[in-house]
Image (cartoon, rainbow, N blue to C red; front, side, top):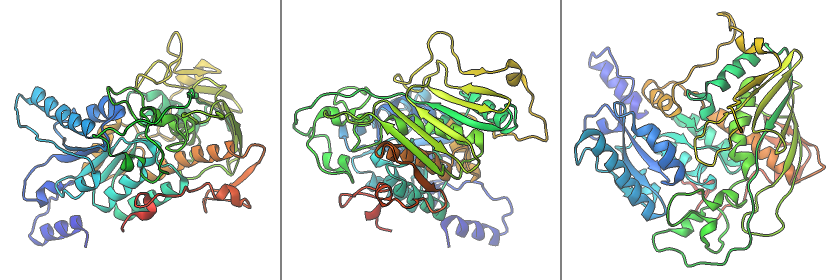
Amino acid sequence: MKRRDFIKSSLMAGGVIALPSFIPASVLADKPNDKINIAQIGVGRIALTHDMPETIKNIDMCRIVAVADVDMNRANYGKKWIEDYYKKKTGKDNFVEAKAYQDYREMLKDKSIDAVIISTPDHWHSQPAIEAALAGKDIYLQKPASLTIHEGRMMSDIVHRTGRIFQIGSQQRSAGMPQFRRVCELVRNGRIGQVKHIQVGIGTDPGCGIEKEMPVPANLNYDMWLGSTPHIYYTEKRVHPQKGYDRPGWLRCEQFGAGMITGWGAHHLDTAHWGMGTEFTGPIEIEGKAKFPESGLWDVHGDFDVHAKYANGVTMHISSSFTNGVRFEGTDGWIFVSRGNAKVTSSDPVQRGKAASQSVSDPKILESVIGPDEIHLEVSPEHHLNWLQSLKSRKQPIAPVEVAHRSCSACLLSHISMKMPGVKLKWNPKTEKFVGNDKANGMLTRPQRYPYGVDNIKM
């Protein structure tokens, strides 16, 4: 019997009628507390500027009680950051005594921890999410959902099997960026007629030259940082800065991700799926091309073009030549949506001049009122708060795991098509296999270096 089911049945047997919607692990450890205990995995730029600040401020709902990072300098700084925040907020020196770990797997053994936030490099997304679910923890995971489609499918299946609450960091679905929900709602309700085509604009990353090998810092477990990917020499631009928290170099290395097609594609393809109502499927055809650096440390794709088709007949063109954002084109007009000049991190692209978060073929479309009997998409608060509320209610958040997997899959399919220019790939969204192309199917996973990787998790 599951732990929560056991407690529920025990309370009912004792004549208790009103059951709590959330029973934190701390209760089971004989430490009565109605707050959710959260641990942070990965203490880098995104954690410190976005995930931790947006979560910790909900002091009435949760406590961040532990951090883990393969770089102990970062783990120790995360511990100090948490304790300093609570001291400033409450005036108490020991309001929270956070624990710092170098290996998150040791942290997952702590039964007092209810949930984790994962803000690690892309190649370290699916594995800790799966292990957290198996350890009975709920999960907030930074996008993209996975390094490969194989990993993503495994993660979604295990999260569903274990009944954990999972939120992907697709904050375009939540408060702060309400234009995305509004535009998707207008599209879903036919305000531009029948959707025929979608344009998605995503930028690119610059390359760099060859970087010399450097000694591994004593504070960094570099073998674990590499994880399931092949062993390769250490150089600072491959990993993250040893001083400060500027944008890390791994974002531009194919060994650890796919580049901007997943970095920004995870956001914009999710919006495209939301507007089409195709959040639980994917394209049926895809063809692409891209420029890749011939040498250098940073080797992710440069300028690219990808064309896809969905079973509903909608075609999609994803390109670095378009303005960053999503444009829906229908039989009765078009509508474009972007973040305008809003930023989550300092490196986010913005529109020049006035914030152009929405534009449309006819201004009357934006003025349209959605009737009571039409489709109303969920109105979500701030993304981390939505996740916390879901932990209490046990209802699915605005961006659950299968939605995360499908938006990431569309990005990874785009990346595979870039590697096979001139080939129109046929994809079966149900079986999640390419039809009649063994080479493409071989790209659905990557070799995993033992003892790391999802295939080496002890179930």
